[in-house]
Length: 111
Image (cartoon, rainbow, N blue to C red; front, side, top):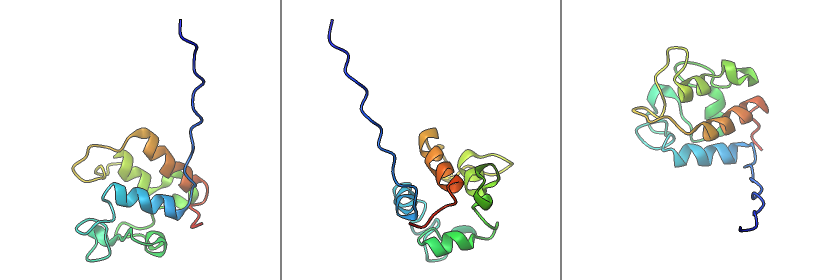
């Protein structure tokens, strides 16, 4: 019977704009044609912290620090009558959405 190996520690990414921006890029959210800085869809530019805070056509994304009220989380979870993002799906993994939720709950810090 092999010795049980301890579970590796899960390293959580820092909850800051650098992490979120990298996730937006990895998910193609902030690319051209979606929420990049040239003609962004719904007037929502996800290429800078200032433009994230400014929100888009549908308003503020932060929910005032409450993930349950966050338009960003609404879109990622396709809740409250919103279409799922990324557009055309599939939905992001719950673990990834949980990072966005934790960042919102932490007050969406820039650094």
